[in-house]
Image 1: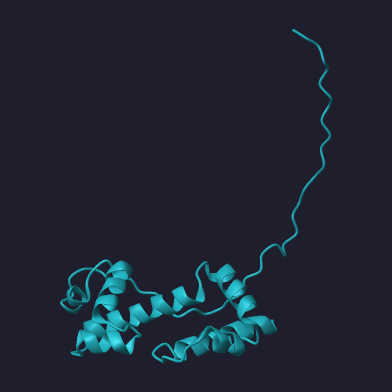
Image 2: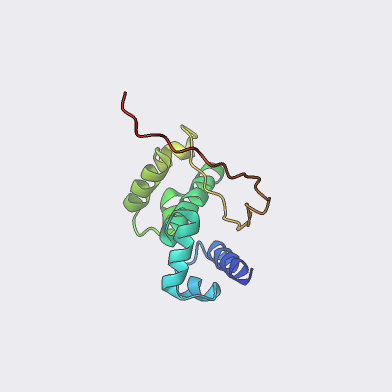
Length: 144
């Protein structure tokens, strides 16, 4: 179960540094005690998304929350969550949430929320399966 703990440590590291410009896949993989290649592969197999996609979704979720619950300027929120221009933030926000940042601020429409990932293991197949072997008679090759 050591790899599960390592993966969760990497996810926790991403969450703690979502607003940090220095969030790199190399550092994330290191936190997960893995190579970049293997970390990205395992992460995408388990979550059905890339590390970059997870980070983007989480940042846009947090940005939407902040837009709805603060008086911070949209441009400041865009910069805070890693977007170089308000236009790129607005485009990503609209693609992700289906509404503009201004509409989110005015609480017009619904927002998509992606929660923090938590690794939980559930094993199935430990129960014995009851079965029986049945032989079937061979059908004759008669023609009708």
